[in-house]
Each structure stands twice: as C-alpha cells, then as structure tokens.
Image: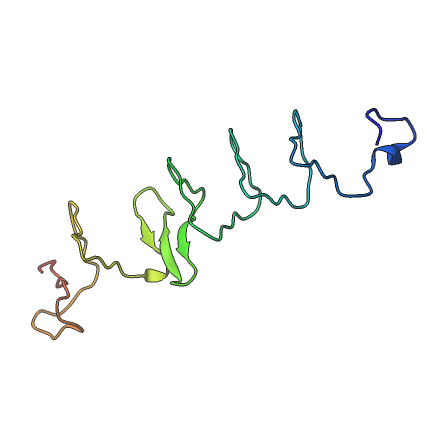
Length: 136
C-alpha cells in the first residue's frame, strides 16, 4: 500500500484485505466513506448528520430538546399513535388517540367539540359535553 498516489496505477492504493489496527487509532481523517460502520460506542464532539432513519435497540436520551421538522413528531409503532404538530396552535394525537393520566390535566380552557342533547343518556358515565347553546 503506497503512501502517495502513483499516476496511472490507482490499484496500488486499493486494499485487498481487512485492515487490522491492533487496537491503535486512526488520526487526522478528513472523510470516511463507508457502507457500514460498526462500533461499540459512537462519540461525536460536534453535530451528527444522519440522512436516513436513526434506529436504536434501547433508549434514546438527550440533554437538550428533541426537535422534529415538518409535520412529524413522536410515534409509537406498537400503540399506533403519538403526537405531532401541523400548525402553530395545536399539539395533535395521531390517529385520534385518547389521553389517559392518573394525574391532572390543566389548562386555561377546555374546548368541547361534541354537542349532546340535555337530559339524554351519555355513552359512558363521567363524560363532559355541551349542548347546542354551549351550556355544559
């Protein structure tokens, strides 16, 4: 393997076997072009640009924001739901999923979209609705 290119003989700089570094480093590399990188730990001191999907067999954590672009957000493949935003007003549940918590839901207003007939039976006990005039 030549250290300098030899004009007209590019095969002199072509590896024909795996490179075993015997646990030594490779330093001062400008660009690594590879089909696959396999490592126990990937440590980037700057940004990491990933053009395809990022897949993990375990948790993904961050000390900063998890920022999505476009109309996407967080999705649970198993539960077939999650959260996304398509405008600057609403956080939306994917596939119309309900929200369940043993804690408290708090906000300035609750907007009731469904209109019910006063005195009529509800589908389920504990539901909150309004009539056509807006009364609860």
